Length: 303
Length: 248
Image (cartoon, rainbow over all chains, first blue to last red; front, top):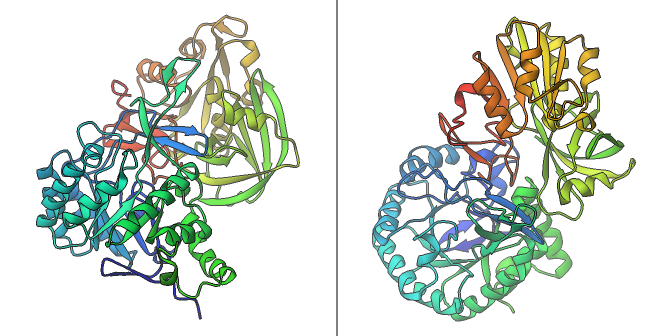
């Protein structure tokens, strides 16, 4: 008999805490032939906006110490295609929690996209992306000011009855103030962190490596930043926190949970190891045994 | 798609800054010409994509040019050392699209995947000739390998040190034959020029900086006639009519 790895996130039962992070697992179906998707606790889908977007010019990817930069720029088919095609197709292959990651360029746009997602029965949770660093006048602009973050959270909560997780940007001075503003505005949970704004320069061509000049830094290098922010926010807020940033092993999942995460998203590691998530899920029971952990729920926020 | 460990059998210089690596391992997922593998390079985070240049049983051949940190690390690796590969990625060349006589057009290290394609065309009984473009004679490779397959091969170099002086389009003009389909791999400007010069149908193997190489991150998307497509999963080989050169 396998160990019970299940956790509850905003009233949704996850068979384990491992969720591929938005932007690192497509719309789920891309990976459906690599392993049984039902090994995953949930899947956070690629960031979606009200209208379709082509994304940024290439190069969109750059290597850097401890990870990578990306400036994909929210390439997506729009929320209508998400709810009509992508999510129903994924539901046929996946019985776990489907998390729709929604982004926008105004409060109205966020609300309209979330209202569309609300009408899709196969979506279990909405992840509000107020932290994308790769689009102008949108995304991160909403997540770096407590008032803006609260206003967009409030607008979205009025547009949907599904649980709303707000995904926060680490590119702020006081993460706790933003987190509390979202909680006060009615957020059901928080996800942190999105990528750190970064930049690389090709010293031979004297040009930025990324066509978009700057991009989001992710990978193992950001893990300690994510653990710190999860720990700070989990202590300060009552709503659940999902940890995200640089996770690549079962040990990292446990560390993130000890910092206060109820569930854990795995991002960049999916890019370098297509089997990263099932590998981490498979390692969890053994690592728990080694550390004397009976139930994952017992270690959430233990530090 | 399959992940596995491969042992380096050979890793030797093929031309200036250009190396040929022979790897042995489980090649069951490797697939056809134009498909690629993702190599995990020790010390670096993202895998590096390389087209499969040739294969024989459980051995595959990668030809790579040393252009940066990742490829420099590969140059330093010795036979007997192991590499973690994801194999069988992407949509390769369409051998079945070949007509009466095909034209294989390679530019610089883009010549690499055309050797496996040539073997597949030969096995399918399809006739072909080869036009290659290199910077100079020191960068040229595979000329004799294509000749050994019985193909007419013309080369152009920018300084005229091998074959005609000029670009690969000059090598195409030097060929004596009538063609109805082409397969092209090289730099973007080279492939743009080839697509503009050749009036018949063909396909190109595109290159972009990749994140995952498996289709999940959308880091390598290019504009095509059917919208944004991922070079890693929808390509790297695209039909000529799909490519929007004015936007690439």
